[in-house]
Image (cartoon, rainbow, N blue to C red):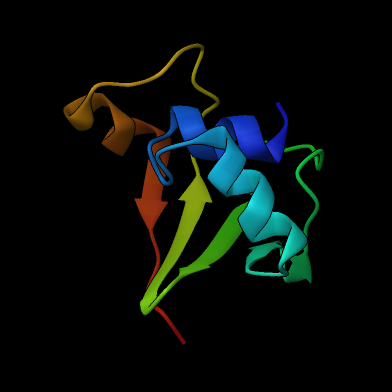
Length: 83
């Protein structure tokens, strides 16, 4: 699944356009490397995102098939401690 689409359906960002902007600005890191919106996301990958003052780091547990409800999105991601 594309990174920008994953960020949207997993509810890490509200819009896919915002996910694209963050990727192009270098604020999304996939497995330790800056990622483009078309990067392939797989279970086990680690995603780090900087949105303003907010920093998120999560491990992908599964790929969602559609936009998740609030409680269900937790099943997709596993929070990681920030370094």
